[in-house]
Length: 117
Image (tube, rainbow, N blue to C red; front, side, top):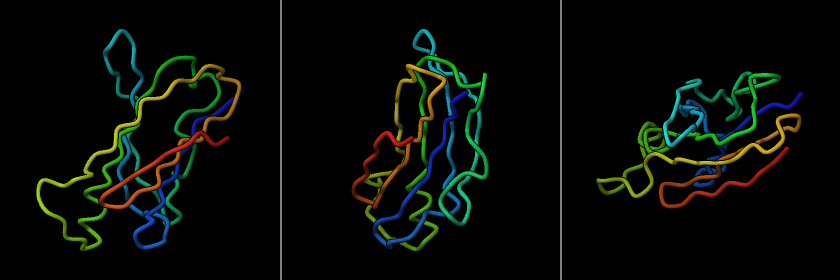
């Protein structure tokens, strides 16, 4: 059985991003259903997989990272409204028996992701 995990890296400061609030949704028929809300730990990771085993199903998901609040809490001053505030990643799970790792690499001005395993 597969699992879904994430982590957040703060490339402005060169550290894992601690205390980033993350919300996970499942997208069905254009509607989102809330599955989980968590915050990253000292290593920028979640303490457990976001989904694992039968909870991870084939389909479309959305992760929302509250990265603007994270940088504000670190004392980073940027013009309002924030250029990067909430990062919303829509992604698909084609094979729920595989591991899906969806990390966020971010600064207050840019972000990127990739599929890890």
